[in-house]
Length: 246
Image (tube, rainbow, N blue to C red):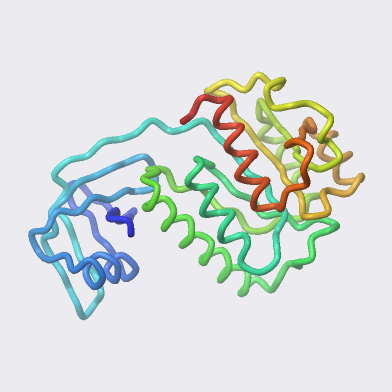
């Protein structure tokens, strides 16, 4: 279980923690007034503090900051991943945060079996995914909380990525297993990287053509056909290896 807490509510030398952190830090870890606490703000700040106030009725506590350190922001690493069934995306988010992604966008593709839901359900799911990301950030000690976007149709990427054209855009899919390897992309530590991974059946030919038209280059992950959650871990690990981010 992670010892770290998370809050964005920091003003001068005081940090406030709401219900989720109250449950974890006060109820589970049994911290008391005067105890030391380590926490992140999700924006590169890593802090040590001393708990000064606990309000059980309001499920809230406060800590005075005693030490702080700001980590350099990592180069952008954006994961575009086909929306999988069941709770697989929870695991994908968890592992992606551990491996240093800075943004995650679930995709609805031609071969995606999960469909977009009502705005209310989407809001609930996005809040759930954000909680998964926070828990993974605290567990891994990653001081940066990635942004998790609402699911998008793959056609929406066209204008979005053209407005923010990155240096390296890579699409992984089974048909590309004999094409370029990541070593040929010459990924450096400071490169912005966007990687796209499709559903179990891969992106459709039209989707590959669309990604190609906005600057993506196809790459493979070897001879075997990987499950989506395995492919995500393999792709991110390789990107971070070649970017020398570990």
